[in-house]
Image (cartoon, rainbow, N blue to C red; front, side):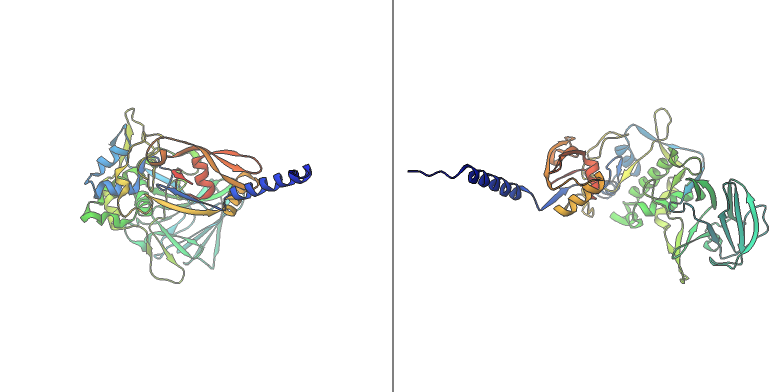
Length: 406
C-alpha cells in the first residue's frame, strides 16, 4: 500500500524545491562582451586612425565617411569663451613669469592678480608681485559683470608671457585672457581665447599626438580629421553655458587643457600642446563641416565605434577602420558581480530593487555582430523588472558602449 505524505509536508517540500530553484537560477555575476567605447555617434577616433593607416585615406575621405551630408567649408576667425569646469564659486588667481599682467582701468602691470566675488554686482581686486600666494595688496572694489585679466603684450609662443591660473597642485598655462564672470548662480572662470588656439589645446587631449607618426606619417590624416571635427563641433554652438561661455573644458563638451601645466615646486612645464597636433590644426585652419543649407555641423566623435557607428545627426555607417590592431576597445569583455550590478542599479533607481535575477528581452538596432547595439532590454529584479535603454545600462554599469551582450 502506498503511503502519502500529509498535505502540509508535501506543500513544504514544494516550497523548498521552489526556493532551491530560485537560488540556482540567481546568477552570481555577469560577463559582458561588447564592441566600441563611447556613444558611437559620428566619427570613431580609432576608426579614423585605421582608415588613415590601414586604408590610406585622406582626412577629407575620413570626414566624408563619418559625416555624410556635409562638406568642408572655411569660416572667419573667431573667439571662444571656455567655461573651466570646477571653477564655480571660486576666486580667480592669476600669475605670469614676466610680471606684465593687467586689469584694464585698475593700475599698471603686475606679477599676479587675485579676483573674488564681493556681491552679485561687485568684485574685489588685489595685486601681487608674483606667485599664487601673495602677499596681496587691495586695489579696488569693482562694479562690473566680469573682470578680465590679460597680458599687456602678446604672448605668442613664449610661456613666460602666458597667463597661469593658480590651481591645486600647480599652475595651468592658458593662451588668451582669463575672466571671472557671473554664472551658475555665483561666478565661474572663463578662458577667452581664439578658436584656433583653443583647438590646439583640444586635439592632443582627444587623440594621442603620436598618432601623427603612425604608418610612416599616414596617421597625420586622422589627426587632421580630429582637428577639423573639434573646430566644427565648437562652432556649431552650445547654448548650455550661455550667456557666460560658448563651450566648456571637459568631455561634456571637448577635453581642453590649454598650453600646459607646471606642478608646484617644479620649473618644468608638462606640455599639453604638441608640435604634431599643432600641424594638424594649422593644416585645417578655420575649416569646418557644413550641411547643404550652410549650417555648421555638430560633428560628434567618440573613441571607438566597434565596427558600426550609431545613427544620430548622421547616418550609421560600417566602420572598417575601427578594427585597427592598436585599438583596445574594438572588442572587450568585463565581469561584474551580482553585488556590483545591484548596487549600481539601486543607486540609479534611488531605491532597493531587490535581488538581481538576470537580463533578457534585448531589442537591438540590427547592425553588426550580436544583432548590434542594445536599443532596450529588461533587467530582472525580485522587486520588479525594469526596462532600460542600452545607453542607460552603459552609464549605470560603466560599460564601454551600448553594444554588448551578457
